Length: 190
Image (cartoon, one colour):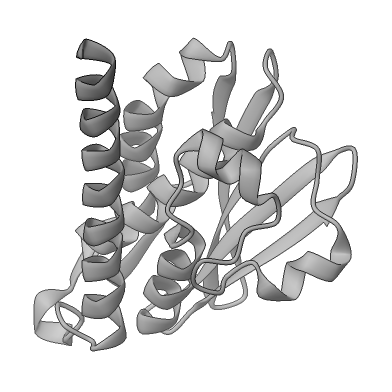
């Protein structure tokens, strides 16, 4: 009986996660909370540090270190909670898909008129044929492993839509056997 209650509890958490992700995705797609009046100048470094703090327990449980290569404190005009959610999704995925006893490296730098947030993992990498579809809703490279890791299949779609809603984009590069680098490019307001 306790085993069934535990299964019900886990499935309830999983369904709650899916519902929350669907609501976030819907909100972003409709542009809610993204009017300029609801945006502030936010420190990208502070959002990264906050997301790292939230992912640290999961990382420690897998003997993964999260390294942040900090740079000058860049600011962007953004909805801070949505942008933090996008950064959190990337770091969380990197921790989940990295090999145990490895590192996730987060960095931020400026290129032209954009701030680029990069999250590099030391996972198994992703075959090139999958890269164009990674930011689609419910797309999974390895369905069995994704379910085991507890993902909803919406995290990267949320990242893409949040980046686009802020006038930016989300990208990925990957080398099989070495890992992947996901990035968010956001315009700098002058």
